[in-house]
Length: 224
Ligand SMILES: [Ca+2]
Ligand SMILES: [Ca+2]
Image (cartoon, rainbow, N blue to C red; front, side, top):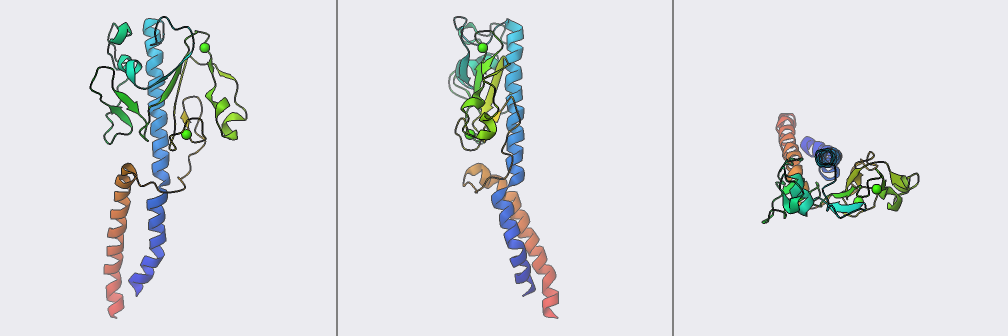
């Protein structure tokens, strides 16, 4: 009887812990910001080393790239298409253990992919026309929080962003290199993907152990 009442009291709390996961959401956002910082810094260091960005020398416009292909190979220290003759590694990302949050090795020298916590490549813009300005992606963001006060251009040589949990570019949950993310609150619904399930196991096990302890402590009181 007592155990049942305790379970009724703790059950909703445990379910909320498992399904909302506010800490997990924040951890992913902070980790994504750190990865963006490393990526942008790596490209800036390349620019200092070679006095140009890791794009074709024939390009004279700002370029939109992704964290894959020749750009990524170049940043990892490979001399693909003569982009990195000194073979300096500018980033050292961790391996993506579950296909998320790191480097996914490909078969060819320029087939690797660097993906965010939700399995999508980062988007990168570099200042190909060398005016130290890049069109501000926030202008096209669907969220008024992002687009309301967005300047037309950002005074940067490099910028990068993650598409965020929804995997859609230009929405409120995008995590970007030039400002703090807007959405740091818990996700509204639990997603039945592998990463969420694995990260929930510790909460589930802790809940089961806690309930078992409560039941064991409650039994003597029931007997009396
Ligand atoms: Ca520019
Ligand atoms: Ca998004």
